[in-house]
Image (cartoon, rainbow, N blue to C red; front, side, top):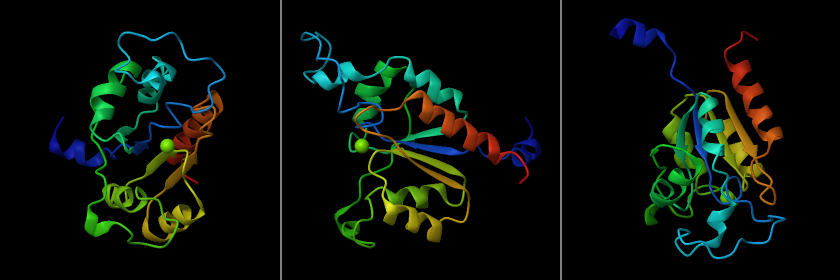
Length: 173
Ligand SMILES: [Mg+2]
């Protein structure tokens, strides 16, 4: 591909992905399985869906971890769900803590900065009204803040919503 065609091709939307809640539901109706040998001592890892990585990749976005797991998401979560190593949204430094209005999630400012105007999806169970207001005001491009029910994790209905939104991005309004 030449530099010219690279320039003409729009960047893929970003998808910022949380782990606890969307990928590891808290309210699993199933009892935890008997202690597994490769769960790194964390029984919640048994709740990860090994097929969900492929579904996320099929969305056609550039995936970014946005989780307190940090780099451990690449080491512990990615191989269990079929995802490659992904870039990681950094945790806020001490100087950044507490900046922004009360109720703003720690991820909101850095992910808007990361996106830098590029369309993005944020999949998380902790998105609130303040985050939506912040993104509306601070992000000039399209953004979908998609809150997942942490009791259930990412469901077919969530994927439908994401697919529809992403599909509409490419269509003239
Ligand atoms: Mg979460």
